[in-house]
Image (tube, rainbow, N blue to C red; front, side, top):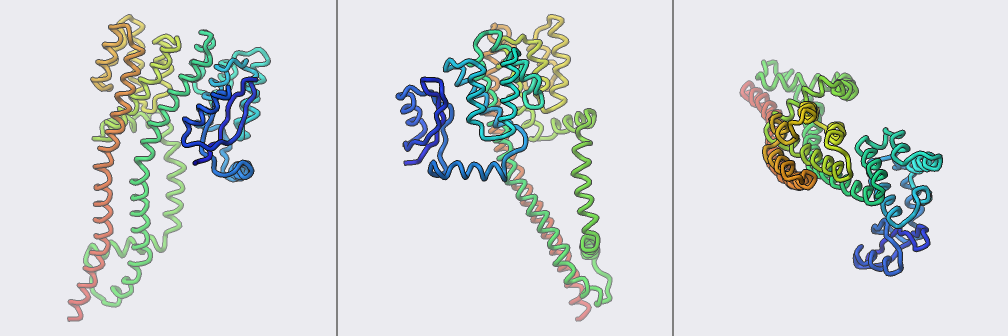
Length: 410
């Protein structure tokens, strides 16, 4: 049976770490609860208890991130919710998390938050002072939980929301792995052909003394350029990788790029569905924790990745302040899918907006998966065909030159 490593809260409020053999994680949870412990984390162990610390230490030295990552924030949120729901005071829960943290940046962050809390500040205030790690959305959810006296439950729901958003991001990243590899292989193949294969024929063509066919002359010239000016190409790539992110960071440029993305076939549909799923889930979470609709929309706007869709919310907020509702102004933007706006309108009219937003998020999470499959179904054959045409064109141009030489000899 596989070996699982667990972290759990004992009946005395201490954090216990150990390993157990079981058929699956559910069995580990049942065994820990039978012992009166509340599970915090369960995962497959990479080895025995003695070797695990050394392996983790090696990873920390070589591969540990220098800043607090998004995954660490999700784990911190989940563990803090578990400890608070177990009845521990906030400062004691933070102290425990510091004791079991393996990442130095996360440990330093938790120590600062603990010190602020012990100094009399609310948790939301301590988190707001660290906005480079905790978003406005996160801070407002925590503030709502403090006001309602149910911080543990609120943090648990927040962790669920963050995990669902992470799943959506990861599905998009996973879908782009194969196309990225294919583009990389295409680029390397073309460079190898131009730098190493084409020059083998260049001297032969020059000795023939006959004008080359235009495709052959172009390929020979490009190969010669890459062979003699490779350092300029490399510098150009480095300069572009430095300049382009700064260029796209400008709001006006970014907004134009976002608008073009939305107009692209297939890609625009995928981007819209991803943003709508994130928008609906985030707003539903805010409303569920007592944040007003106006405040929630202002917060959600900051979490959206597409500037055009986010900017459209300014008009929605303005009309909402005028008492014109939420669903109708959202539909009037013409940017959000009709299904989503109709569901929101129904939820608003029935007084179940929070519930309907959660349903919209679930619907568009599934739509994202479908859109990704459709996108890959078009992209992969297009990339393969483009690669075949590009490499085939280079080979064909060389063959044209060789055939011209054969005619000259004949």
